[in-house]
View (cartoon, rainbow, N blue to C red):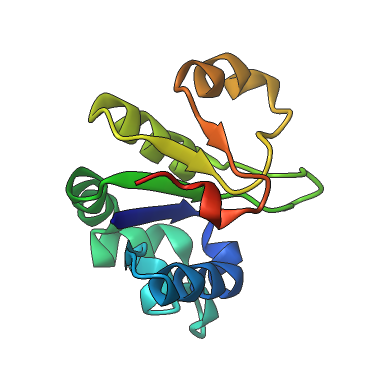
Length: 135
């Protein structure tokens, strides 16, 4: 199965480990360009300019369209448990629009301004168990 991962660039190390685990059991994994080229680790990293220079938004939408399912890797960030940022939220919307099953690695965050929308997408929470992704 082809799985597109959506995440904050802050989670790049964790996400590369998740991708490896999925590949070891036979899945093809599509990662955000920023994770693949380790954008956040580059000297003088400017997230806005990096997104413009790499055209990451268009490229990731293409990956979502190509995938069978989407996996949101949501960890604690900025004191918010199971954080889903603006970019990941937008990618979840795109996945929903393309009728892709959406999985969240961890429980959905308590973020009131996106609570209703995220819950309307039919996200399946894996509670850290990747084997729950159905083919």
